[in-house]
Image (cartoon, rainbow, N blue to C red; front, side, top):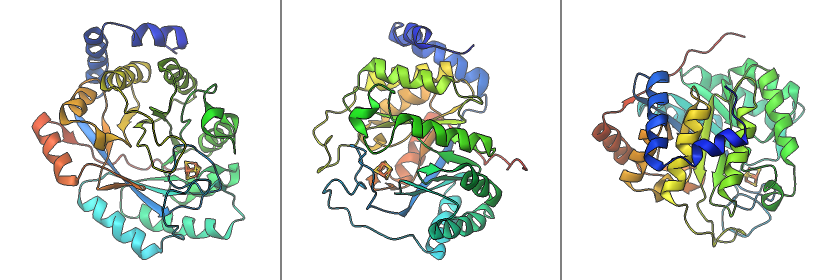
Length: 319
Ligand code: SF4
């Protein structure tokens, strides 16, 4: 069943325990292995981005004290990817702080070379490079990218309060290019930016309209960055987060629901509730692009404590 705003609201507003119990049943029916996917995210080009996303430490519109770095050399990326694999990650995601790329950019050729080498390590390869042309998407897929991350961020209505340098529709265009090229879509949002709970459900409604459905849905909690317009936002309420995780699990039963930025702000008990409600993927490692993330040992110990296994990489589907 494809959910719309009315049905999503009906789920989200269920009594808390009824909601997480339903989400649990859906999780168990679709993910019987009880495994969590570990993803490592590496920033391959940091800072100096032309876009004005109000939450982002990497935007050149704000003085966040972040030092710009140019594109990471292949050897450094391969070293990080190899370490991630040795630590149990089955997915390696490379992020660049760019408005986007086209097939004509010199930097794009370097990214393709990096992707080809990382793909040989046997992990799922994800990239997040901003806007893509259909041809750039095709070339990324050919080089070995399995998934492309491009978050909606928030609802279409709240989006202009967060970003003015590109539009919500621009993001949907990129997602269409990614899907046409045969890559999986990793697409979610950030909560705690001043949006309403209804905005979060409106974003989920858009995700429910994707065809095919998104393969993974990262749910980020804002990490307020000093110097950005959102520096003073209060933390997200844990029960609102769990409700959103549970509703996402019910609406998109086969998607990986990923706890992403902001996990460092959650207690172990809060994370356990998210796993119970259907989260089954985490970003892993000490650093998440430019934000802190729980340490590798702390994550392993939490997963052990909860009896959760670690997922193996999915084989690459030939094009
Ligand atoms: S496009 Fe990406 S890197 Fe650039 S400001 Fe927005 S979120 Fe940050």
